[in-house]
Image 1: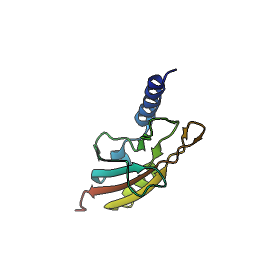
Image 2: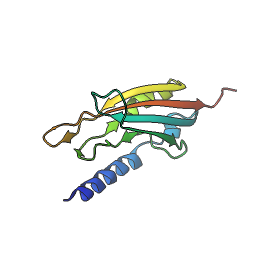
Image 3: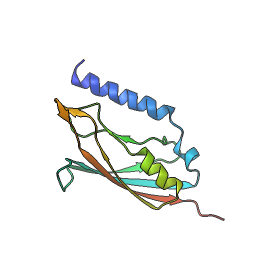
Image 4: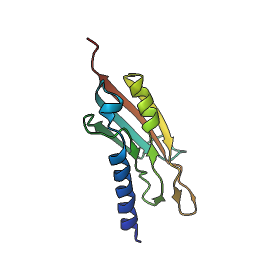
Length: 127
């Protein structure tokens, strides 16, 4: 299978996992909005190669957040930030920070790219 086919299969598998996961609104019913600032870079670098913001659509988002590794030659890698993010959301924290290392492979070696995130969450107020 060529690289595009492998990438498409990984994407399809990630989509199947997201579809099978519980919905975020059911896991954290008081959550109104969540924005995640994501940076990704090499483990030894102090600056990020990639930075972007993910706006979570709470009403339909899965309670599973796996971010693909941005290293184009990485195989079987990615960053699962679900447990750190969900723990913070269940604790109703407004700011949640975390870091996850990619455990994929690049050539014959370990990928090791590091993803860092800061999530900003808003919740329904108690009445």
